[in-house]
Image 1: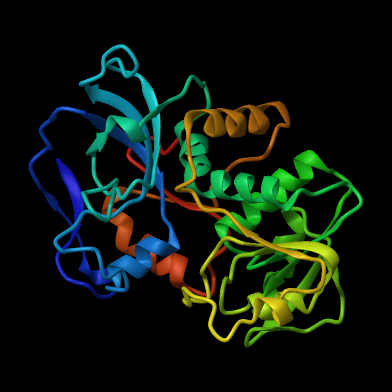
Image 2 (image 1 turned 135 degrees about the vertical axis):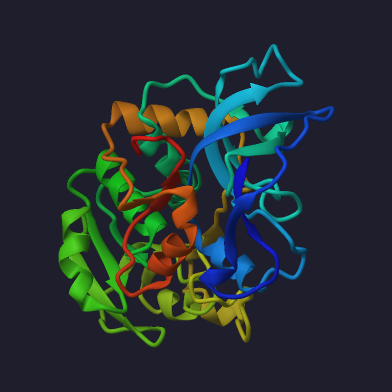
Length: 322
């Protein structure tokens, strides 16, 4: 099969498109023909060698959509069954989705019944699932004023679209280091765009709920813009800082307010089904910003790391990219 292998950490050039043996099934694991997958910042960090637990060579990729090609659980995962898989150490402890096929544990394969095109389905799992879980943890009401910190990211754009589906008239602001992306943010549902300059928001505005995608690097500053009784949901780590340092929860959490989080490892069949139902019934405009082929993965990584990056980037293994 064709796959993209990383043999040593480095830049996009270490993503090598090559031929490798197709994995052989083993008890408790099934073979998935991969139809598409999203590209995530965490995969860039791993490619750069910032994931100490990851050993090379490795096929990266923490999510995928596809069909069962060989199964060891024929009742739940029959041949041809459409499936989604997220996290569970795929692309880290074992080879992931940057390939035509992936051998994955049955416990992290979730069957889905849908007529959505592959491009739409490939956009949903990691990005929209993370945004949806975070939206629920923020306990948003229609009268809230909401801020997305890191709004131009795939998860930030997905969150805006999901929030508009739930509350069409809600007040929503987003942050960006580059205000030249304001028109793009407005087009996907943001009312206001705030400059995030070196980890400090260039505004005195306050919000009821803040979706924090920059992460520990800016959480303290986010609390300065939270109203009493509000919630900060720290989900992303786009600031490349993994831990809260010099953070005093008694002082730094705004009085009578809350800090929560969400990540896609918190996944099960019911939650995925809830997302799919929500997206379809609310007619959420789920679509990728850019689509690449497997052979173009280095270019996909370059785009996601560039200043031009916006929204969700996916790879499709389908001939017509649909």
